[in-house]
Length: 272
Image (cartoon, rainbow, N blue to C red; front, side, top):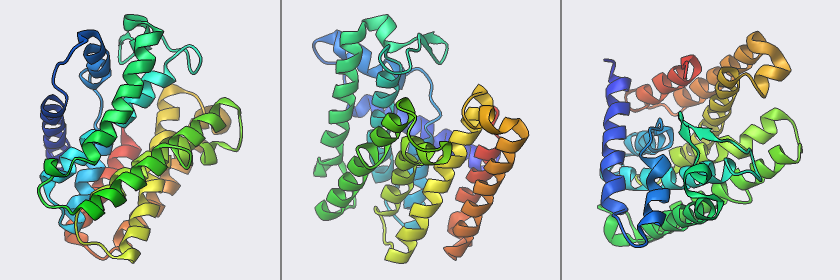
């Protein structure tokens, strides 16, 4: 097992544990069950891994990174629940299981998504959950995540996708890359980071996010795959990977950014 694989496995285990710590069973039980349905049914934990990498690069506390990463995972899973609804993508299955609205009903699926989104910000704003981060910095992190999850990012991108506004790259920039960018940058904000480093990390996160979407489209045979063909889409993916790696190296911290660089190639080559 490579160092990257060990890192990703450790993050998954810690996030799974943190989910149970932060979201304990409550009444009505059916709401709790709907909230954790996707959370406990697999998932790559890509976003928490990027939070952890950002914190590692800048010296942030690793446990704080897991807490922030888990909050972002709640936001990501809220978006999956809502995306699967009949009014959106109308998907009956997610990760080989009935989608949330198929198992619990559309009413509970909507409310479970709403609950995950709001609970994420309850976590992000609860100072006592963190080991070594100031209230001001937590406010910065919460603001960043709110912007990238909302009208400046994921929600904007979803509207663009549904209503066919903009090209595939622009849609991917908002719908997928914005929250991935926020993950890497919020992790970096847990440590000591300069404005120049934040700019580079933001650019890196955006490119990783678009890369992730392109590879997703290739695997699902839609989007970039449909428009450019598999060969063309893979060439575009390689271009974004190359740009991300160049900017990672521009950070000038090879001993700290090696994992992130390996992660770019991991995403480029993934097969599921």
